Amino acid sequence: MKSFLRDNPTIAFGLGLPLLLVVLFILISGVPTLLVAPPQYDLLFATEYYNYQSGVQISVINRSVQVIDLGNMPNNQKPRIWRYRVATGAVQEIAYILPPTPTSTNLQDDANKTPQTTLIDLPDLQGVTVDSSSIAPDGYAFSVGDGGSRNIFGGLFYASRYRNAAILTKSGRSISLPDIDGRYYRGNTHFIGWVVSP
Image 1 (cartoon, one colour):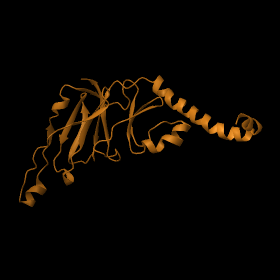
Image 2 (cartoon, rainbow, N blue to C red):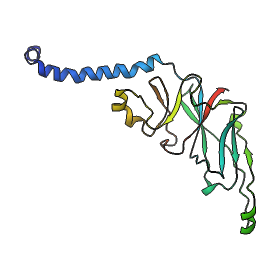
Image 3 (cartoon, rainbow, N blue to C red):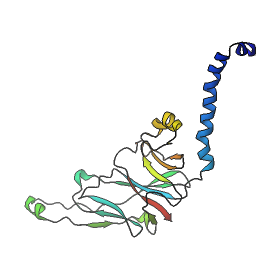
Image 4 (tube, rainbow, N blue to C red):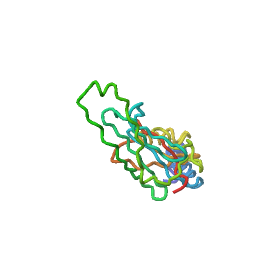
């Protein structure tokens, strides 16, 4: 075999180059994981969030998450709030209860009535301090979709992996968040902020 490859360098080159590229790709893709520190801050985000002028609004005010029911939620759509815990890699839903919608049989009264604004309690986020900056204090950013590696290898090999995923990225390192309920994070995903204290 050695003599055959020595006598046919073109074949040896044709067989060896793809193997060399695979090894090189594995080494390059693993470098950010080894050199870039893991994330330090939990992430808060919402799915099924449509940001209607009437309905549920989610904001960070005075470094705490505020959920405000502006009334008249279209099609009973309720955003879901999630916390990604970096210590475990798990995603936890932050549950909240909307006030009941008042029922009325008088359409004229409904048309003239001003919607009532209600602040919704979030018991699981009581006392939690949130930074709504797009980049976490440790340098990680949250993105949905093709936010994977930006180098040539990432473009060739990673694009489909991250196409419908939520990921944290920093300096070439990408951490894919677990898929919630078997759903992709496509469409209407809303970044809320980073948990900077319990």
